[in-house]
Picture 1 (cartoon, helix red, strand yellow):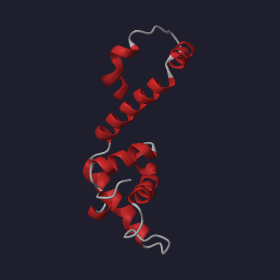
Picture 2: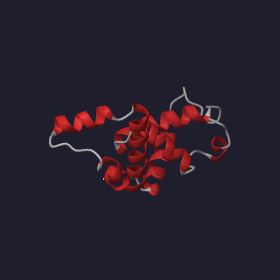
Picture 3: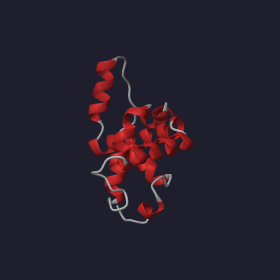
Length: 120
């Protein structure tokens, strides 16, 4: 869905009639460009498919779960480690790559305020 919305013009320049043709198209695209296209589609899809309220609820649940583990002290844990932990926890719930969940957590400001001020 997101690729169709974002990249219709880009992909319309290619012709293919079957999966092998499609694979040839994908393999012909520069790796950096392909990563950028995938990132854009994943981000848009996450914005459409993962409502902020639900993401916020799940982030809070992951943080509460972390506080029950004596290995984790979220007050001293660097923001990037907390974001990584929470992202990994949420991957199975939202079926998006951890980097996209991490991006959403950061963009939506869903870490505790003290953690948002850290450069991570």
